[in-house]
Image (cartoon, rainbow, N blue to C red):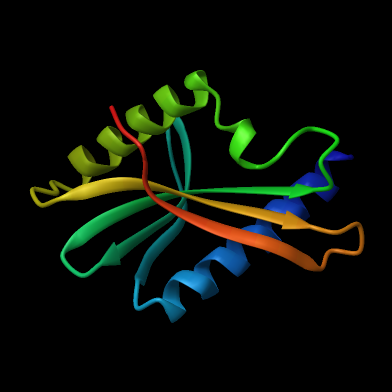
Length: 122
């Protein structure tokens, strides 16, 4: 898959995840927050809890499921990103890292979406 296709698929997945979370009464605070450690796809609030969301979108299973793409190295990077965001924002409340896993068919139609709360700890 070409870079532009991957970015488009990723953006589409983030849009789906943001709509899903909003429908679940989350408030989306920001998208694609960047720092030296990388990027957080979505930052949201679930009541009083800050939620840092990694969205993993796959078209087909040639590279495995979206969940399988969250390697130990990726988990460590997400924890670093989360700490960077929390510190930058001077957040003193509860926070967690969630994962939204999305599978699409070759035509870009949604096959499956799973939301894993507190999926990454560190």
